[in-house]
Image (cartoon, rainbow, N blue to C red):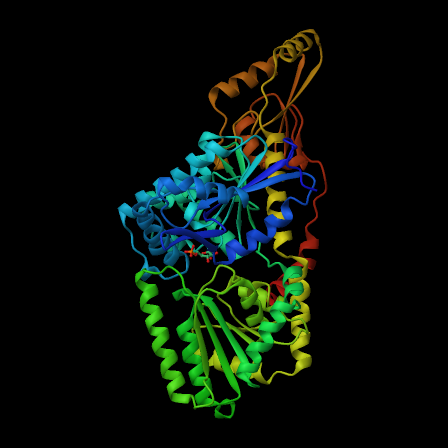
Length: 613
Ligand code: F6P
């Protein structure tokens, strides 16, 4: 049920650099096409399901339309966008040059994908990055309504959560990164000011999500080493009061919809037409956006070695190489395109014959049904990125296997490899691993193919992109509820007066005082929360009143509490109640603590840990 009229229902505002559609000019007119990439396809699927829930009202997608739009055309674009639940942020070409081609594509993208030698550190690009994040904030401030939840996406907008938090302190904000988050040693190569601002920017969110546990841990390590902020099971305390959760949410695919679509007439017809053109060879698929992180050259070289080493496969196999144009005009992308063209020509020239081309190469945007038919018609998918945040093509390929046949060869450097362990997992830097995997895949029995795909399909079906989105937004709301529950509330006047009255009139009082967060504020480093002279004098004064029984209750170690409060005539409960010192008496254990069980479980832990490596 759609709740458009109910203002108490929730509205989700998704913010990403790109809108789900990209505008372009053709013959002086504005034309639109669907934006490429996993972020857009995944999120669109989730949002379609969003308004089905009765507690959700509507959604809005805020982003850049892909080109500079003159003032005269902005209204047209705005109304086109409104029909698709979208709101454009207009930015001029010069700003986008420094922001998008500069800081996003030439600094963050190479660094986060472990290509540090490609990374440029340009002060002007950084200032454009700050400026665009501020422009997004300014647009959002005008749009945000009560009951909105904001979900910021990806590396283009890492400063935005904190910029919004400064203006709207109570707003529920989530942040999700679609790329890898690199290890501390790589992240630290960013200039000090920038790396601090990026981490602080992300921590403006209430919930921060990553695709894999590794990326989550890298981020937590970076905030410790760079900002000095510790975490407790992914929970981070900002300024001693705002709890932020950092967690892992592996993005899924629209499993049910892919399963239905591959059976549709449009996809079936396209698949049959392609098959008829190619004849009967086995088809290996290579499908990516043009990017040096995707390992396309390594893959082509490995394919050439495969044909050389196993000539029995000549004429019996075809590589469908589909490359989707991307980041045109950027240095490394143009150069890479030329290298791929040359390599394809060389391989086809060397191994091909009049009636057989080892590689069928296409360089163009793919409509969705063509993409699906490509996935559906292939016997093997060769997904071998050098580094990839997730790689949804690998998941889409597995989902598209209606008859459960087909083999996925997957790079261990893709986030998806964490969930698709039944694929043939390879290291893309080791050519012989790709060559061997190709042979294994092409010769694999059907029973084995089905066995592997069945397991992966049931996993992908369980945690699809809709579950992913629900999981993230659900967690965001529960973090927000927790914050509200634990946030300090000022005592109102009547309550305070009653408390004082009852205290004054009573003859026998017990005062149970918690330490951290009560007698002392929470500190990022708990060892610095030492009681000061004023606190000690106050406690002493209270303890001297014979009508008072003072007890400090804490989770801290008894030795430390004894050092701080030992001389006072008060009771102390330490280590979450495990040790008690009654007023003017010695410490006694409250429970018998046995630790021999640890020896029994330890070997099991080690065994499980070594199996999962
Ligand atoms: O990998 C994260 C991602 O946002 C993809 O969804 C998208 O394909 C890419 O990065 C960015 O592409 P572009 O530069 O074309 O916006």
